[in-house]
Image 1 (cartoon, rainbow, N blue to C red):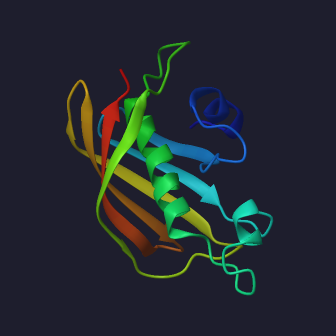
Image 2: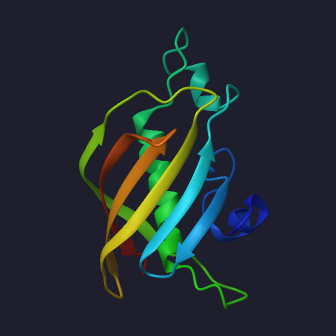
Length: 142
């Protein structure tokens, strides 16, 4: 399990773009599970449907991508850089709006990993109901 402070130290993103609060499970190179808590103070709610707070689909994808990068995490290394970046989104589907108070449970499963690319199946659930799913393609930054 990785807490928020450890996640902050590993992700290249900085505030206000942290989209994962906890990593609850890591099976290196196979599967990772992470949590994103949706709160009413998310900065995106200022301009995205201000009369009806709906968490943007693009930020759900970003949450999935950030969780997915932990597929490449090597727990036994003190210093490391998560240097895979989102290259493509394939067949993403959104089934239900995500709103403040929801907790996104994001599962990312490696479909194919190589040295410089990764294909990942990602799924976001709220209360055990799928709210978004699709494939993400990552490339290593050179």
